[in-house]
Image 1: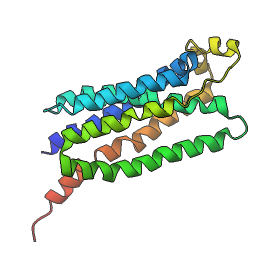
Image 2 (image 1 turned 135 degrees about the vertical axis):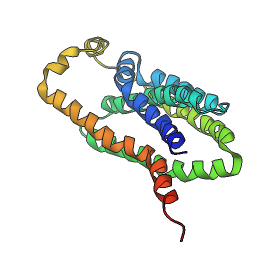
Image 3 (image 1 turned 45 degrees about the horizontal axis):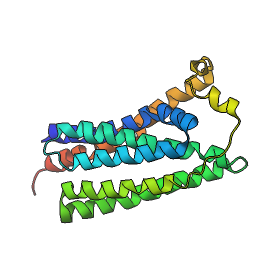
Length: 206
C-alpha cells in the first residue's frame, strides 16, 4: 500500500517538474510569438491533459496525461503570463509580479477544498472533467493580453537561447540555489500522504 501511495505522489511530482522544466521554452515562445497565443495553446493543452485523465482507469497513464500533458500546458500558461508583465510594467514590475503570484497562491488555497468536495460528491473522473472546463477559462484571460509593440531588435535577439548566460557564475549559483529550493518546496508535500498513512497505520490500537 505504501509503495502504491508513493507512486501516486510521483504523478504530482512529475507534473510540477514538467511545468518548471519547460519554463525556458514557454518564455522563449512568448517572446517570439507573444504571450497571448502561447497561453491560449497552454489552455488547450492543459485542459486536454485533464480531460484525458478523466478516462484513465489505472495509475500508469496518469504519468503521461497529468504528469506530462497537463504539466506542459501549465508551463505554457503560467510563465508567459509572467513574461507579459514585463511588457506592461516598468516602475512597479515587482509589485505587479507579487500580486500575480499572490493570485496563484490564493487559487491553490481554493482548489484544494474544491477538488476534495467535487471528488467526494462526483468521483475523480467527473472532477477531472470539471477541472478541464475550469482550465479552459484560462483562454478568456489570454484574450486580454493585448500585444505591446516592442523594438524589433530585442524580439529578434530573444528568439534563440543564449547559452552565454551560463558564463555568469552568479547566475549559475542562483540556478543551483533554485534547484535546491524546489526540492525542498515541491517534492516533500506530494509525499505527505504516504508518510501520513504510514505513521498512523503503524500506531498500535489502544
